[in-house]
Image 1 (tube, rainbow, N blue to C red):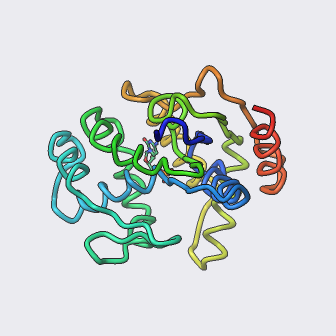
Image 2: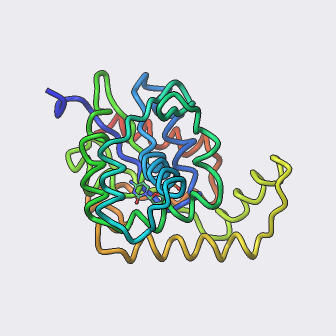
Length: 219
Ligand code: DC
């Protein structure tokens, strides 16, 4: 049964490095990978395109229940269209964070997220992987980093892509998103009681990955 398939849940705030870390841990173990944030982003993209407002919870849940995303390696397709880059814009990021407060939308995405749990195992990255979606995960990690460290990382990523960026604006945006993700009543961002907490502010990605693999070997 799927519940015997091991899950490593990696939760934490935006720009904590979860995505990269989770993908590397999955690759090291030969496990599947779930980027749950991408699902919220897909719904946000559809909502923006179809004129569904951020407060129309039932319509948003409907979009989530009927979309059939296809994950092909690191590309994401929706109805045959490659939306990998379209879901990463600032506009979609902001919309995803706003719509993620709605319980009906979160409920509509539950089964889809659980369907990623397939042998030999799954590494799931998000905000509520250990608390709500996979409460029986074999290992739960809560990955944080200071706002300064996260703003710095995002700044470097943007500059490398040739996109102008400003550290102060990025920090303010991260704070606002943290606030929204942790204050919402539906599945707020918080560590599971049995999560191992790791502050990656002063760590390299390799060190974070090694620590998680070490914990996994011990549980
Ligand atoms: O991880 P991310 O930045 O791609 O996530 C986009 C948004 O989706 C984020 O603002 C919060 C929301 N989200 C969520 O509420 N629960 C998850 N498990 C993953 C993401």
